[in-house]
Image (cartoon, rainbow, N blue to C red; front, top):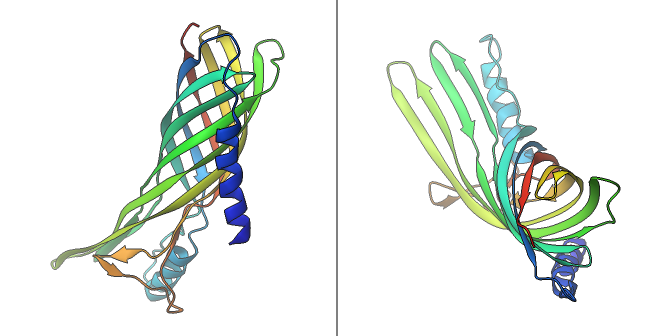
Length: 230
């Protein structure tokens, strides 16, 4: 808990300490990307493991959720001396299902991440600029688990919850022109949604603890940045 508080304060301090530009006006830019994320998903995968124990002998198996695609947009301002600030929106996807002639089961666990970030870019090497980035934001879960049975209909449980999210990343921008860059970002995200509610009621794991859906893990983003002229 102490380390988490330190990361929060560090991210907040970074945004506060970004200096105003000495002469030039801030330069706005817009970035879009697609990538992938690794997830922990301990409680979810414990449930899937129990489901697979019931499915033993049926010839089918439900895969655990360890990764998923993500995509998003970010709007930023280059404010001078290598610093940028901005806001990003990410969609984090996580899904697993299993089908049998008599039944089907599905976990669909998308989440939305809204974050503010501070970025420091190093001196460019030719067309390439490296940078460090810290983000702090809010992750919101809107997922479901659906069980369908042949001749008996289906039943869906809705999952909801939200929590703090933190990210640290390194990346590069390869400028194909003064206003267009190819961007790659690699980092780590801490984003565990605790105290999940199932159909509006608190959910618990097999140990009797509050159920969590954990999107923490390494991530990769590849995309394109469009920058306005100064």
